[in-house]
Length: 486
Image 1: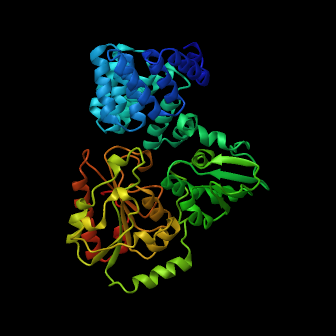
Image 2 (image 1 turned 90 degrees about the vertical axis):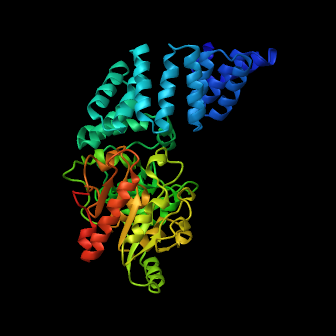
Image 3 (image 1 turned 90 degrees about the horizontal axis):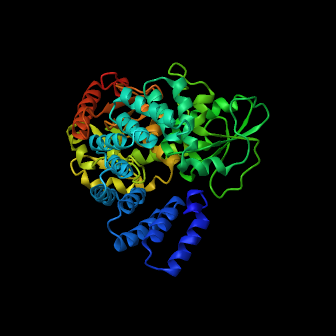
């Protein structure tokens, strides 16, 4: 236990195993070995070991609370909630169990219940920085920005190095358009545990805006495909400083990013890495360039599909009738931590069947989205199996009149191409879409359709169908672009 508390996790595990060799049913050793395994990134093993400890000693509240910690990590939220409630029944004053209950409820998008659990945690343990931070993050998600910021500032006052609290406070500033403060807070993302591999991967010095003439810099992709597409717009600005720009990115983005102005080479995992002098995470560039609402680099398309691929799709579509061509996406990747609230059933798109003179093309690439045949009333062409990467998807989009999508990488792709794109947004706020806007300062050709109440996708789709009908009736392309009334 002394090794464990001192951070010597490997030695602690060795000693716990030695204890178990001497006494295989020793519940404290099973429990603490499980905790150590979980802390070393093996949550499934932690769950198995702690459950074995509970089978031997079922009335220890700490066992149930810690079990919940690792059930959350393997996305078994229902079981985590059950474990938390069991821990609380055994010991109502166990603050950690109330905290874990709140985290489990957030994962299920049960924000009011989660905030109540965090508030109870704080009542039991007022100086618990993690509880204040989680409360602030949950309040942020439902738009209670002032109390959210107050909770996050309290967490920072209790623990000035609390990265999650700084990061979430930065997200609130970005959401409200206070970019100068927001980018500073956003840098704390690099201190989060899940981003540690990104920070350690490259040993070259970090670029922070100094002279670049004649030097080679590696821009490091991070987060999701959409984030990379949104912020690759800064690569030309870096190149104009006199640098040779390399980009380290995910393989499905290679061909697309290779055509971005100023990008010398795109490298992916497994490639031989060319020599370079400096490195910089891609999402740190807005702060380095002093980006504000007034100077976002959004003055034209910055992603361009391959002309040969565009021509192939042009020939393919020539066989189709010349109705308005609309790309459609209803789901993102299942691994996204917010996919539960951003993806929708394709059945909800049935009101689009009432719009005349349009044909839909599926741009849906994830199994999570469900089959296209769930849209029996909508005229739909599905060539999505041929969209092997984002460059090919871009070539098809170039032949369409409009893209309608939930908040996925395709929204960023169409926006980066300067293609009219309508994005369906959940009620929970993402900083990049800001507050109460029907347009986006990042993408001039984008319209935003927001839920007006939590979970109300039907209302969003009805407004999209109405707007689409009006746009096709008017036969004016500009009416497909942003509108402050959306």
